[in-house]
Image (cartoon, rainbow, N blue to C red; front, side, top):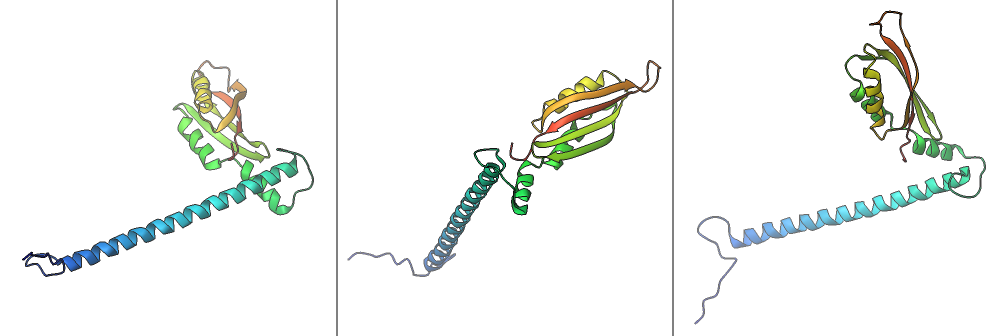
Length: 177
């Protein structure tokens, strides 16, 4: 006579096999549900991205940026173009704040948006002349700016240790770059 293993028979210690099978089935069901939800969300995001890319291409084509045609933009298209070309201002300000060395004081930061991206003007004072080229190099090192140049600089007074007033202009990249 052969002995059979009864998986649903109670054990003397711990969980029954039946309870373990129920818990395993529940966990497997939850895992499969999670995978199906994630798969659905991934498909929706891909569809949304394809729609947005097609819309951006259509707007660029209507502006003559990426193909034939031209013409007047609707208000919705104007907003889409401005969102695509708008610089990432929080990132620009973060880069500027992390790049300012000790001994340089910024007095004003002015940002302007345009169809090509944006422009940023920085005005301030350098208390040591040697700090200004390093500051420009730090700004150039980040991909937020496509162009950085010293617009003007002049000594505040005729004294040797006088602070140097400067104005820097940058060309800021848009979000799509």
